[in-house]
Length: 304
Image 1 (cartoon, rainbow, N blue to C red):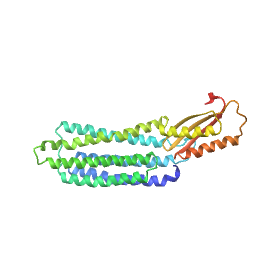
Image 2: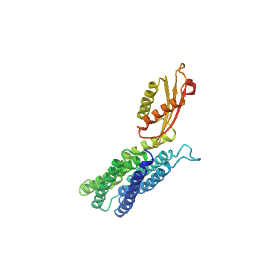
Image 3: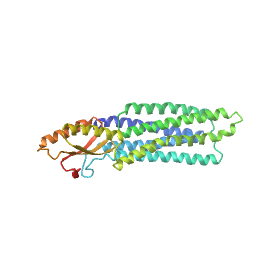
């Protein structure tokens, strides 16, 4: 999953940028026109999404640059760094929505000037956001975190749009009933509920990205696959143990392996050792990550 995917990833990220531009203008303009906080929130979220999508494109360019004297281990850390930044901003937007809408609720709520226009916006938004999410999800199914995070943004926007529709539908149905006193609270309450609902997704992505930036061990399923493949090769060549250290940074999997040979093992040629390295490389390449490997052979466990 390296340079060969760069044009397709870039195209998907650019698609997300332009869709974000459309929805930022549409949401902010429509929200101001009918005085709807929930639509305005949707437009503001789309506006932040544009900036975040552009950051993703910049990160994609950086991670595909070759190593140099300044970045001797590559630039893979830019990917989780950008994902963490995107997640932090989205969490901030959600938190802002919760706080401002809660204040609005305490001051008596707010009433939109036109529920029918609000429902029309919501239906257009649901259709377009759902299309964008499915498009990115299907086309970017096996792509790295940058595209996955972008897809999640559109899923969140789809949920927000559905909340907008429910908000205006409830306002329209209740406005001519004895329960019309509830109507001013529907819009801000929906913003709070939507924000609380989808703040979980960026929080989870933020934690995952921070784990990568701190060089913590990868997910347990990745560790299990590494252990299974490397230990199989170790046993096939009569090594007593393979000590494995690993970390996932963006689309790169960094693996440090020390093969422990038995004390009575004889002389081994460099060609033989390089052959084992090639086996490891072929096996781990099947996991779909760009590999950074360091493989050591020793009889003394203290070197592990």
